[in-house]
Each structure stands twice: as C-alpha cells, then as structure tokens.
Length: 259
Image 1 (cartoon, rainbow, N blue to C red):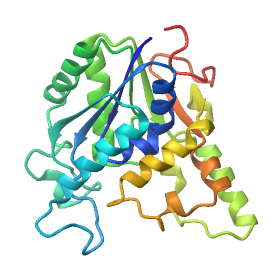
Image 2 (image 1 turned 180 degrees about the vertical axis):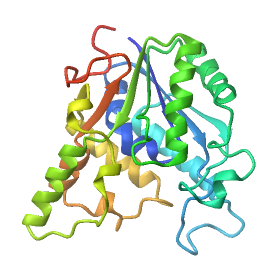
Image 3 (image 1 turned 135 degrees about the vertical axis):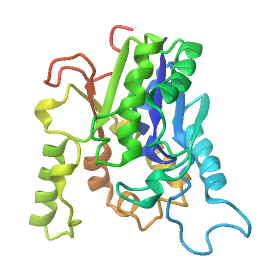
C-alpha cells in the first residue's frame, strides 16, 4: 500500500478538488494525509453563524477535521500561514499570509511531512491554482518544490477540465437552467493538457458529506449542494489531474497504478 499526501490552500478545498481520490485511496487501503496551508481566516460567513466569541478560523479547523474523517484521512496538518484572500485584495499583504511566504521556507515545512510519511503521491494544484487564487497558485509553487526537496516520486496537479465544464454549461443553458456568469477561460486547463481522469462517481456520497462538514462556507443553497444529483455527478464525478513530468494526454485513471 502507498501513502497519499493531498496539499490544499484552505479548509474545504480538499473535498471540492480531491475528495473523491482521497476517499477512494482510503477505501483501497492506502494511507491518506491532508495538509492545509491556511486556516481560512478571511472566508465569508453568514452573520450569526458563529457562536459568540468564536473565531472563523477555529470553526474551519474543526470542519476540516470532520471532513477529513469522512474522506478517510488519518492525519491532518496545517502549515501555519494566514489566508491571503482573493487576488488583488489588501489581505494579500497582511502579516504571515501564504501568498507572501518564502517558497523555500513553506516547501521545507511541507517536505518535512512528506519525508516523515514516506509519501508516494502528492497532489497540488495547477500553475494558475485552478482559477487564479493567490493561495492556490502558491500551493502549486510550494508543493512542487517540496516534492523536489523530499524526493516524492509522483506529483499530480489537481485542476478542472475546462472543456468538460463548458460542455456542461452549454447543456444547462440549452435545458433552460441558470448558469453562473463567469469567464471559464480562467478556470482549469483544456482537456488536451490533462494526463489523468479519475472516476470518483462511487465516492460522491462521501464527497458531498465532506462538503456538508464545511457548513460555514458551503451551505445547502450553495452551487455545490443545491445542484440536482445528475448535475452534481457531472460536475464532481471525475477528478482531473496533470502528472508532473508526463506528456499531455489522458492516459491514467488512478493515481496509484504501479505502486
């Protein structure tokens, strides 16, 4: 059996980006470790959601542990950086933000976990962080450097299949369903650049339960949970990756083949 370390920017990113492969790995007997760069301090929360005196960061840490239990992670670690907020916000430059952290310093923190765990597989994000969030971009930079320092043999960049997304949007529009007005050219990568597509349909109940564990950020009325089952399966039933060092073209359907 192998060890998977899944590295993410904020609480709740893990279930959205890699929840299926994490639960799949755990069910197949692999060790799953979740590492989160920040505690999601600048996330938005509905007024009155938090208890009196409760910090959002503390709530999000508890939510992460609950999600990790659903997804089969045996260890959860936070690197200790502060949420940078969206690109261009003043919060980017606040003290100890992940965006302003030294890549070498942050990579050393992650590499120590990779070495301790003898990690076989590491997941990070693509070079644009999926959609341009500074902390997600930093996950890419820090994760790749940490893998170099630790000698982690297999690294996958979690991303979105932009072509798949656009096909889904077109089908929804044709059926008369509302579609968010977003520029999808900033999301994910074209299918031609991907190298792995993992079918996680069997793990969608766990993925949805992990999303529900992050109630401070993912409400029942959110894009994620308000979708009909068929639309949810289309959106989240496959998790897409680019394997570092591999030629473009989807040739893998599992992150552990050969291990």
